[in-house]
Length: 290
Image (cartoon, rainbow, N blue to C red; front, side, top):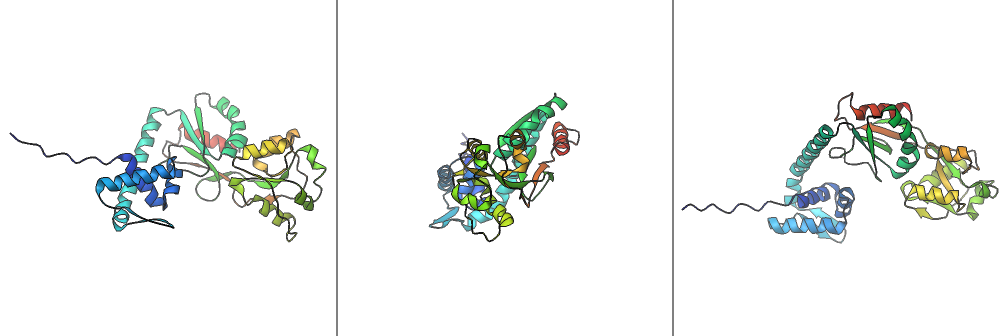
């Protein structure tokens, strides 16, 4: 009687993905952010993989982790494999739901720029469904499940909205803000995504004045905007996002000086769908109505 040899134990895909992300991004925390899990989960998956293959893939130290020679040797092939897998998954999704367009963008862009345009967009394309995912940073373009991305900065895509920043506040607070020096005595609200906005505007409006804005930092721009409307302080406003609130009078701009942002809001398509696809038509509509 023949005896079949034991089959090799398959390596868990989740652990392989955790290793590849941590190796490519240089650490467990960065990998956790990309994968949407905790750093502890990434560490546990990598440790389980190392135990299974009986070899270390990272060296751990006080300053972080570094790839071992084995880890560095296999990383390029795993990266290429996961890139191909991500592209295959997206093709599957595209073919299964061709009328659904998935858009990734900053939370503030989703709420203040994209959401107000959705009713007109969907009226123009009633056969199309739009799904929006708010992300703090652009996704990995080779593996993303999204069709379109809207983010500030350099890189791919084309500008759909130029932007400028300037202080805004509730009308009741505006009488106390007549010159930049008044900002020393008022809470200056800011958003954790745009930590440099206040300094950029102050360097434009009153360089060398020695004004250091102080106030709470919010993890969501929408929350900072709501608190500003409620009179909690002065916020660095974005012209591309807060136009309706300024037009309605719920917010006012006490100073005329504006600082142009160096990088516009950009829209890019990941280019997997045909030129006449729903994603391509949505992208064209957003470019024309930015």
